[in-house]
Length: 168
Image (cartoon, rainbow, N blue to C red; front, side, top):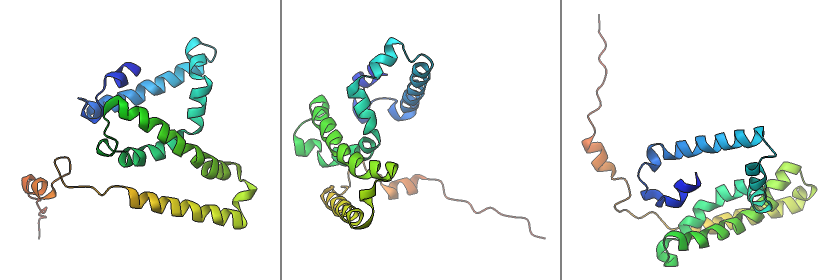
């Protein structure tokens, strides 16, 4: 898995969307099964290192935040591509995920007392304002080579046929 991701060229990687992501998920599931079966193995101990456990704690927030960060810190805006950009995107995503885990996920999971009443309402309004600001900052999609041309797609598609049913 690591070798593939180190050699993959982002979205331009051949086969990424034609099965490579599925194979990656399958390999991850196999790795989890192996580690669960042998929890004291070298691989299991390596994967339980504190930095990786910390990433596991914010993994859902990281999943939620990585795409807005990716869009906000575009290649054009940063002036960086490839690994140089990735080195910026990763910590920014983790930094965004940490308060999300602390202020949203944990209070829901552990039913924190502060999340009720006025404090809960203030937290909700603050989160809504932050998300509204983020939505306003996200760049609008621009028509271009990567966007789907609906007219071109519909004109090349075969005409839909209406099924005919026997009458009688």
